[in-house]
Length: 132
Image 1 (tube, rainbow, N blue to C red):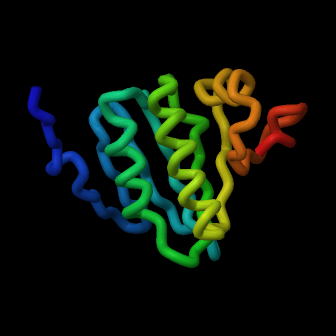
Image 2 (image 1 turned 135 degrees about the horizontal axis):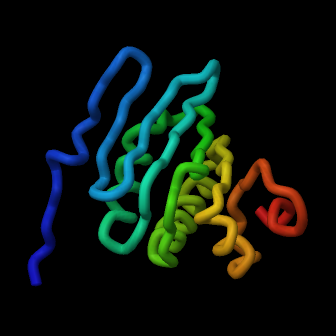
């Protein structure tokens, strides 16, 4: 089976202060907010688009600039998407990146199941928030 690439869907669409990248079922938009970049992810993250989404996130962050990964608008996150997010988090942690994740309803169950996730999650209360 050959891999299908959607290079045209990974091209940023620029508007006045926002960059939007379509990742085949999910979208990520980058917004400059003061000294940080806020990356808002919408849609569904699964095995078909998780690697494309993380690749788009990598391209949208600026080295040395803090960023927030806002996942509140994610409707569904498969374990494969969570696995890609954890690998990305390891990269960020090794590079001492200043970043945080804002969890939404699709991510919260995975954070509970995989409590040793080491994600820098903000905006949660209880044991899950303290484990990142």
